[in-house]
Amino acid sequence: MSFGAIATDYDRLRPSPPPVAVRWLLPARCEVAVDLAAGTGLLTRALAAEVSDVVAVEPDARMASVLKARSPGVHVVSGRESVSASEYRRRRRDVHLPDAAAFANAQDASFTFTRSMTVDDLVAMLGTYSGLITASPASAPPRSAGPGPR
Image 1 (cartoon, rainbow, N blue to C red):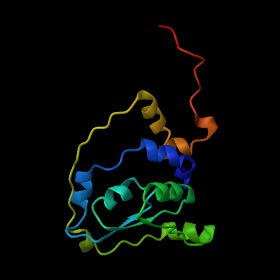
Image 2 (cartoon, rainbow, N blue to C red):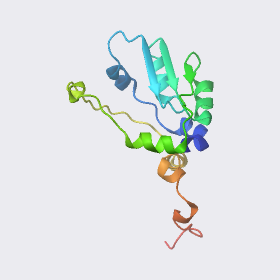
Image 3 (spheres, helix red, strand yellow):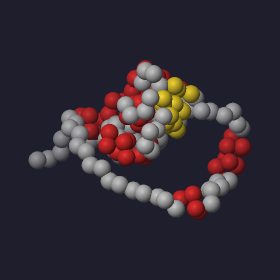
Image 4 (cartoon, one colour):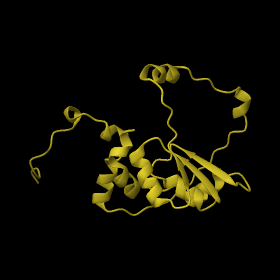
């Protein structure tokens, strides 16, 4: 839920997945795609370019707001379940994976892409990573008073 605080910057600064990677990911004749934890919709919009029916599931209302505004025609759902904090912690420990046979046909591929960014946008993008979003002020490096000696 930490990304919601910077949802607009996240959507503006983070790259979308390369279209060739999205096409590789989708099965032939895919009719419906579901994007779980869709965030602001970077993958959602890439899926919508390939699939006629896309459902985006995003629990953070702030991220979902950007997702809805930027992704017309996509069905957006909140994907939240009202559970107590203790139930949530218990569920996080009880992870049950399916039989190993379900993972027998794993495939991988690599895709390269380039993206031009200004230095200011690159620095701003670093602020959209969870390690910085959730960092306490005490863990921040000291700020310089100005340029150092040359």
